[in-house]
Image (cartoon, rainbow over the protein chains, first blue to last red):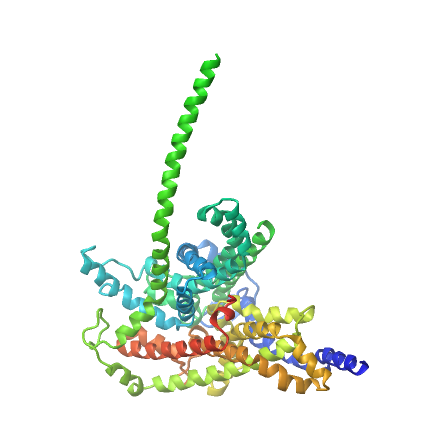
Length: 292
Length: 298
């Protein structure tokens, strides 16, 4: 008996040995060098003074931030980015919630097919999907061809190189994430609660609004905050589907870093982007923990 | 007086019930509609999700040199371009090699972390896990420039291998949350009784790990590796910032190609990539089950 106890203790101590500490230190150093320090460095840059392309002076200033929130061009960039985030959330919710409910609740044999579709679209290359949207949405693309063939429209609809195109592409990118998250939450709801509502005489709709909807609200809020954070910082989709006619914060960061070489301003814009996505996720999760 | 009140009551009751009847009828109609609207919404949602991939696959077999819809004639000539156009095969090899390395390291790190953290993470250790999950929320468009500017301070990005190592580390950090998620979940589900039994029989921790823990975790490990591979293989944004003449990953190559001449060659390559991803996803599904991996049971 004593031997068994000692051996079990040894397994416990395995995670406190010198070897373990070394492993932790290596892991931490790796994250420090390749993850934390670069970000902190980039954010520090945002407080330096820009001189000319590629050059900056180590002198503390908040000029970069002041420019971003005062000049109308930058304000327009921030505004269209915000718009993209909010509209993507709305589209994801409307299209995604029924899918999530079906995935989380239905015993149907189609469920596996739908799960396959959702996961497959989650793991399709981003550039490939964007290319697919270009082919689908352009003036002589699939959608316009079909609509004109049916006779619904006379002239091709402008579906690409504007807000519509970007939202269509972006929402499709975020949709699988939202659906998987919410489906997980809906599945966690105890079916007995729904049976209880049924026993008390509620019909489908009443059961849904009395049980499933309030209990899935936390998942919806979590999913939507993630969709918002991902879509305001997405780069590939707006790059192709906006066709340079709308400038988003992510596109502008790229221009600042690779073309005009204004690193401090890029740092400031990145800080705003990072803080707003982390802020939205943090604030919404706090709200949903507190009030739901 | 009395009769008047009764009258009032009567009329209001009639009014109310009429309204209720109307509401009830609308409600019934809505429910009846819902029976058709709900499946329709599901079908539209699924179509919306797979539309771009399907369109790309159809475009890749088109006869014409510009991408049209519907494709005029069927041909596989664009698939040949994948092998003859300069650079695509090289980029494919580079991406695959990078992704393999990332997948291997991500899995090793995840196994080490989940064993060390053990089944009950607390204090410093759960803090470390939080750190590993943080990249999930990190916009790649911020991370790419940040890492580029930081690394270019050391003047090491002018060599192929140092670029490869830097981008590999970045991809590792981006892939780690996914690998860690599947392996931690797998380790949590693992019944500790198996390990305890081995210890009771006198096995030392390394032996327990080698003969009990590792084999039991194998399916989740392969799934985690698959996801890490796909994350690295498909990642275009950070890679864009580390692109050099001799270092162009496949997504970046497609990205650049797409900017000037989107012809069906791109569609053919995109189809090849999509098929590879789908094969990997199906492998992960057979091993662990997609639902389980994504946090759904059943």
